[in-house]
Each structure stands twice: as structure tokens, then as C-alpha cells.
Image 1 (cartoon, helix red, strand yellow):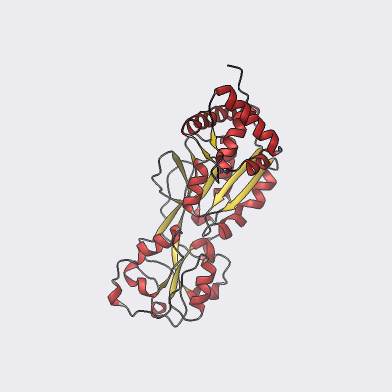
Image 2: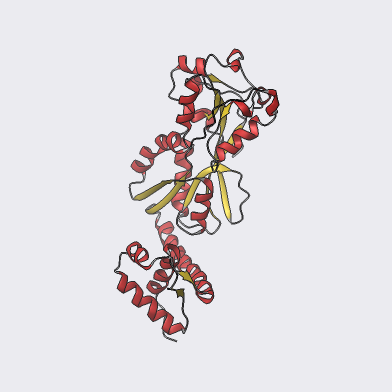
Length: 326
């Protein structure tokens, strides 16, 4: 058997990932005929057919799928060698594809992106806003290097590195019954009166978990049903004296103090929190970038969200207000 080139293996994996020869060629920055010829040569050398080209999108054959899996392992080990060299030289450089969920992206990214890109100009950070399941799928397909989302996931093969713990806050208007309370508890909430993100958002599931202790029959039903993929949309509905919603702490940091007093109610202890983590595959690469990214994010957080000290212990969060935020 003649030698198999890494180029051929990379083309094979690209077609598997894109399920289309044209898209795979573009991703590899070569012409489609070049990619097709190289894969055909590999198939002839191995005496197999890797893809069923009659199907749209193309699908790997049974033996093709097994060979692709081995090709992915080989390419991963080659990347490890490259990463070892970079680590030895102390280089923090290269492309880094990062996914982040929608309820974190508009509030967390502005905190650290500018400083990160200034401090590490040789890192090409490629960001994508995705829901949790999409991030996990792309991590397993090597289409992302890491993700920022809410944990725990208990997902095999995924490493979770907690960054901070963010409290939930009730957003309402002065006309809402909960406004008379100085602080609220989960027992004060109802699912019938809350605006939720649509299905697929982990924030929706967490909000329902907090509100579920009140039975539906304990509160009047509303005659308007709407679910959104955007927290800001839900907040604007609340501004029209329509129910209430739950928001994450980072989303209210830019509100004036006067608006906070009118439209926010914090929780009594124990405060509902969500654990926000940097996640990556157990066989992860780009360790250097992951390390500096994790440190840069935690360094840029408001002081009351910086949950780790030098000894690595978690600080219990008991009080959140604008005065002690950075």
C-alpha cells in the first residue's frame, strides 16, 4: 500500500463534515476537482468507496465511516504535535472558534472581548451565537474549540470549567403585585404570569424550574401567549404592564439606579443562580488559548461575580446590587 497523505485525510473529513464536495472544497481552499481527485485516489488505494455519492447530501458508507473516524484521530494527533510546539515556545496564537448561548452573548462578550483581543493579538477569535445543544454538537464535530454556556451538562466527553455563578432577578413594572415586596422568593412566582424564552433555550428551563412551585390554578390565566428567543423582547412586553420575566444579573448592569429600584426585585436567600462555564471536549486542543481565555473572562467580571480566589474555593454569593459591581 502506498503512503496516505494528511491532505487526503483532511479532505475526507471535510466532506464528512459538510456532506457536500463543493462546500468541503471551499472550506479547504481548493477547487472541487482537486478535492474529488484526491479522495478518489485514496479510495482506489484502499480499495473501498468512502461516500455514497448518489445521495444528497452525500453520506459515508459503512466502511467509509470507520475510516473517517480513524482519519479524525490521526489529524487530531497531528494537531497535538503542533500544539505541543506552540506551548513549548509560549505562543498564544491561531484560530479559536468559540460558541456562546444567546442569554450570555450580549452581556458577557462586551466585558472581555476588547481586552482579550488587545492582549492576545495573534489569536483569531471566531464567535458564534448558538443554543446549548448546537454548541455541544459542534464541539463533538470539531467545528468549535470551546463554548460558553450554562452547566452542569453531565455530557460524556465534555469538560466543564466554571467561570462564575450568576443570579436570577425578577423584572417587573410598578403595577405588578410582586412590586410591593422588597425581595421575592420562588414561592411568590407563578408560571401563569411569566414570559419565557422559547424552547431550546436553557434559560427557559431554569426559569420554569424556579417558578414551578406555584400551581397553575393558584393564578389567573392570561389571554396572550408569546415566547421569544430574545430577553430584551420579553422585557419590553413587561414594560407594557404584562406580567413579569426573569433576567440574568449581567443584563441589568447598565440600568440606571432609579430604573433598577422600579423594575427589579432581587431574591431572598437562597438566591437562584446559574453556573456559567467554559466547556470543551475532553480530547481538547489549544490548551494555551483556553487557559488565557478563561482567566481573561473571570478577570473582567464585576467583582461580585468573581467567584474564585487564589485558593480556588468558591465564594458564596449572598448580595447583589449596583454599588458593589465594577
